[in-house]
Image (cartoon, rainbow, N blue to C red; front, side):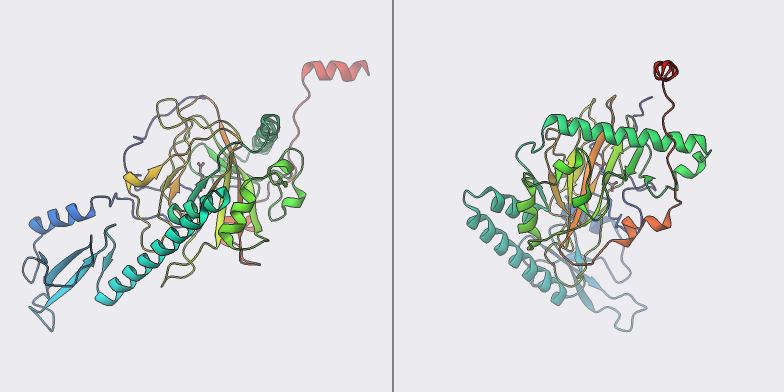
Length: 389
Ligand SMILES: O=C(O)CCC(=O)C(=O)O
């Protein structure tokens, strides 16, 4: 398959259509706010303002450490024309129009930092606690080593490819090419050259029914399960979705997105859903032959801190069979696949809210049913053997 090189990996994600998860996931704030304060100061010297130029306050107005406060004047069309008012900017660029709102954010940040410090302190030598503490801080935890045998990973990969080929065969046989982009119940395109596959051996919502090699990915030896239980604070996390993302050679980078929104919009809440990604090939880090490991922007799972910041981005590239856990609200994007090989990734989505599901991302009912898949034609040798009886 021909390669396309369209993205600069160091650039901020482009502001254009295309897809990560479908539905009402959050795709926004693409600009890098890492230097928010510098840009704010810069804009003050260039931007005219109806009621006079805004000024960065000189320390007379309440302003938490690391924040910026700006003083502006109401415009001439305002009832209180000329009156001064303030806007507060958090270190990540988030804007607050009232001191109360800014104070709430400061208190939430303090509480979170306290919890993280307590979790890290309590973690000691316990790897489960250490991973859970990292998850709380970054929204991301990468396990230490592959937990499934190489043969099992390879068998799972073959099963995924076989399914993908059967889907393409079916699309071809039934002349459904023009509908591939809109997606089918068992295969949806998530950006150019990347597919979300739901093979029958990997049923949604019931890991006890995983068949063949996939059963081993969720068995008792899965080292990420204790971490998942600790993160979600339940002995029985519920599986709400499972499948394989297949990024083909030449697949473009996705838009930066989160898979779900915050359920509590006033205060930062503990995670309600976690994604587990298990690459089915070794991941090749960013570079000219990279197969496009997912980029995660650490810390963006926290309410009000969801903007992409280059300095906080990481692309974990562990060996195949190693689990990567991330908060459903964490900003991320699949990167372009510049290698010559496909990059399949098993994904599993869990929640701690009994009965909760993500209808936007995982409602298969909205998609056309592909129906029974067309089997592979027997090879010439197989046909000859059949003739011989
Ligand atoms: O392929 C990847 O690395 C991530 C895929 C993803 O995040 C998505 O499709 O929403």
